[in-house]
Length: 316
Length: 322
Image: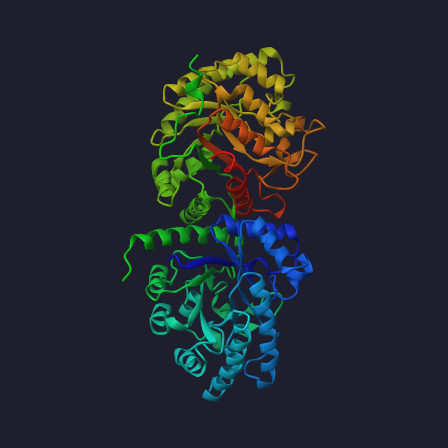
């Protein structure tokens, strides 16, 4: 696992507009992430992305200086909304590629190398997912991938259980239609499990396309097709609203690694990553955590345990 | 006088001079509101994982919290094993909570000794380095604080400390800013009267700073009697005699609603690097304790305070001495 670096998603520090709005809040968040054993952060449009860093710090270099003062080294990755473009709308593709190129340039200045995006909007809005639609998506992401590559940044599509691209055959089709040099996958362990996908099997089959990994746990598989219900996910600021599962009392889909009853087999996932020779970032997320500092501490503990166990076991 | 027997200068096994413990005041959110790690196995699990994950090696429990954990897990030893299974090395010091603290009254002493003998029996399944006590009641309940009263307090703790020593436990006194032994003059008199073989000093950086005492100077004067430290900070000194506020100056004083802060805040008054250099100069080896007392006042939380404090240790204090 020497080629793997660990980062932490900053998004859950920014669930309301008063969060992460002052430098002292940023300092506290960064030091918390650092002392728990992570070396970088993943940003989003609303959490330090877009114009935020230039506005607060004047330059990327000054932000990195601030980050290093807190014990972190860089920004690993950027989960971007690409100016709210719809990848199923060909008219939006040029604007999305331009936005991706600018985000990639910013990310490169911040030391990062992966631009993440949702391959498709919410399933409940975009269904049915047809072969024709997947073709449009492929055109979009090939274009976006080319735009970020010139900045040395790989585009990685993040498959989530609420998104239009969430079924195994649809993922396969999209990968088949996109350029492997330009379009990659961001594998998110909890999202895969909730969607009924097997992250370990996916790594074995498509490992070469995986350019980014996000880890979080879950205790529930969406066997009730909550993802397909009207308003399963709603746009909101600074975070989208998830209503999926609310009718059956699911307030929280995502949990810390090592949560009792968690369904993700992290030792198997990390072993699979080792076996395919994965090189890059593992980003831990705390989406939906009611207490983000506790979550990062718990994840830091589990990461130590995971790495210790992995180093004690032989590669297969 | 055998003062080395109450100082925490035993060499550490496994390398390194310093290990960090954490004083358990923790609260956390739950579906049923705020809880402590003692409210259930799953909360204890989260607590120890978080501390071990961020690099703490020991835990200092309150007596009442350790009792609750002993009940939860079946015994104090099983509670400690639960922590050890999650990466904590052991329980280190226990802050004693249940006793008659009117030690300025000689008539309380016999019962106090029996009370502490019972505590030893209660926790005999685990190894605790020290029992930490507030050596006397709150100031407003004792004043005027006279030499005779201080001598009586010292007699009490010398007697209890002697008994504890026979069980391998140090007695260490912790001077809250509002206790009747809080000023430098009172502390000096108390330690002049107390038997150095049996009565140790536990330095709490914030409590002393609030009074206006420099913890480093206090440590350098009493290094042979110091058994441990609570590392915490404050943003205020008491300039208006808040220490005399009834009923509880920690919660009801006029200066501030939150006296205690984690290390590493910009407004902090304690000079921790200076103290760490002094600790190094004296060749102190053993446990140092981080304490966050009422860190959840004003919407703050223990997890964030703890991460900030440990970051400060790793990046500021450990480079000085570790």
